[in-house]
Image 1 (cartoon, rainbow, N blue to C red):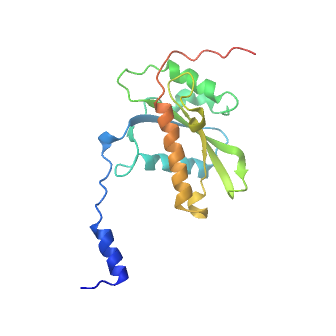
Image 2: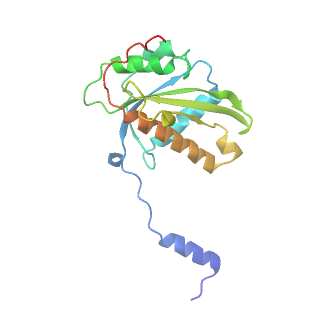
Image 3: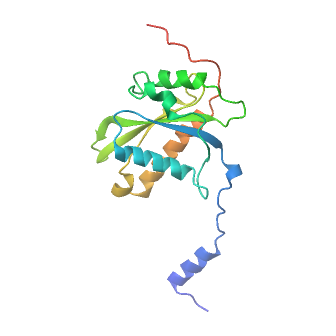
Length: 191
């Protein structure tokens, strides 16, 4: 029997092995607390939170989310800061002092803020700056832990940009989760 080209393609696709959903035990378990900074726009916040939800999806997500070990209110005094102006110090100050049980999964604070310059005209809209903090006094991978996402990716260019955002957010969280508590964040010495 001779198959027509569309039928042959369909037969080949149906013959491929089906990828099994990711099992929860295969994914790193991480407790994430989200902190949104003062100037964040609603579109940006929604995009960031939906991206986090997607990374924790039971079928294809990259993480197994544990209940947050810390409440966002703990970081209330940090929300007026910016990544380049005190945010790293403020969040790490409280994170390194948090009283967490030894068996708690890695704890990460994800901070959402306006992207650099707030509006990137090359992309056609606002960018979302994402900073991830673990329990170390310094970042494990500073470049991965301070990244950006593009909330209009789906409407403007589609999946490739959304996948880039998902990869950037996953790398940010993974790097922060790899930090181990190594003492208290002390006040930075004055220059």
